[in-house]
Image (cartoon, rainbow, N blue to C red; front, side, top):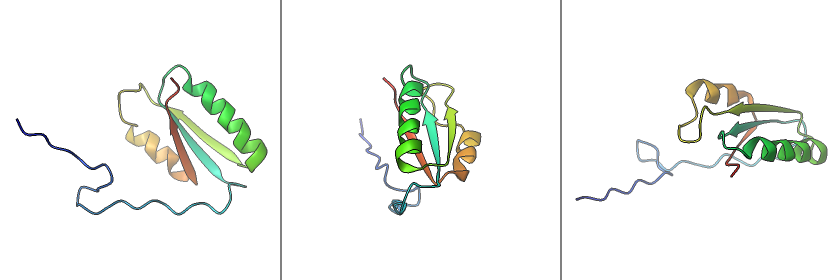
Length: 93
């Protein structure tokens, strides 16, 4: 048996993925939130949204919930996140 280890930092072409530049501020930004459909995620995001809106001036939130935790984010849902300046994904266990 052969064990194959994949590096998630690599693109299919073998180039290392680069991190996006940090936002200078969250004031006036749009933040996307992808809920993994577990029980506590919605409540966690409610709490995070309240903090980001009140303390950091985030203007708008795009919140979507995956069909279930075991599947990848659907393509259309990812497209809806394209209007966000930053995206959070969380597990609410």
